[in-house]
Image (cartoon, rainbow, N blue to C red; front, side, top):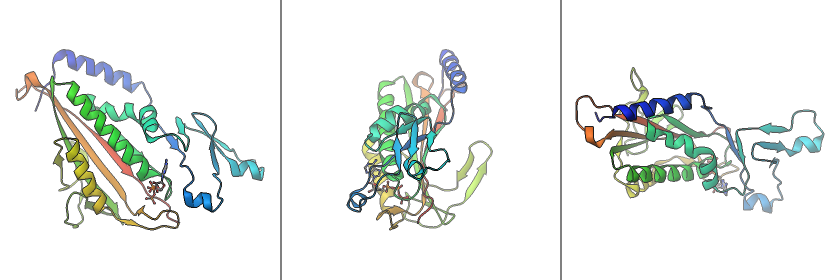
Length: 257
Ligand SMILES: Nc1ncnc2c1ncn2[C@@H]1O[C@H](COP(=O)(O)OP(=O)(O)OP(=O)(O)O)[C@@H](O)[C@H]1O
């Protein structure tokens, strides 16, 4: 167990109260640009981003349907918006709340080939880079980062950091909530170590081809990053408290035509 001082506790409580009054769930939409194949086949995008929060379903307009054609979300990103913009403007705040001990989940949902893997790979990279940057700027605290990765395929859970493909069990822990039993948890040394682990996951990931995506994920992938931190001056003392939080990345793959 690490520790936090009285003042720091007060600051954290204030922060938690401020966050409690803010929105807890943000829904962002990212449109994908047409692929080369779609351009060659003269396909047109059915969706158009008309401002920072609204998308329009163009087919509805063409067919003169009476159904609503405009949909509003917390934030909408166009096909030419870079992943960096999606991260900075839509994800960063939630992702970095973990350094203050607040749990955060970021997940992508969409049909095959909509860009979930593409988006989440960038988001993971930017999030971890910012967390490492935060750690380097806060030498008064000691941080431990732990990383685990599993895949859910056909209702079986597989450890992506292990070559053993025996399915893992889900357990209910009274303190931690739902946990995956015996999932490998690596303590991250540095950025290169994370990149190494991500390529192990990539190599283990089940992929297949769909009519829309040559390299389609066949599973839900969950990457979990747990951060523990304690004030260095209280390190190892009895009355110390550890700040602990988790960022979870889920890639959902639904509807494979
Ligand atoms: N914003 C984007 N800009 C450019 N290319 C993109 C973008 N989003 C996705 N792509 C490309 O589109 C293709 C499909 O994307 P991706 O594999 O991420 O989809 P997916 O939603 O994860 O699909 P699946 O559910 O089948 O795994 C990939 O070749 C990817 O590089």
